[in-house]
Length: 123
Image (cartoon, rainbow, N blue to C red; front, side, top):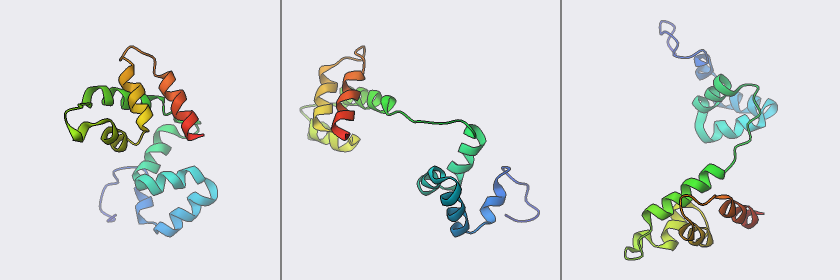
């Protein structure tokens, strides 16, 4: 950042630091933040500090599975090979069984049975 520039964020000073220094400190003091840094860079880390500092966050994949099931139901087309069960499973990153369960349920069906299946498959 140039000395005459107005900071965009109170964390802009971090942009002047070497990546190796940032990674070393994040690894030593906040291992999870190192993962965030590796995935989304300093913008993600500073957003987490800004909005979630001190709050324990345990992201659930329930919303992911609900959205994935909705996507499957909206896009499955047996006549189009690009939207077959196998292609949808590969695109979303879920199992073929998940796709079949999603197609067998409705939007009103609770996603817990699909979520439970995926947890069992991951474990």
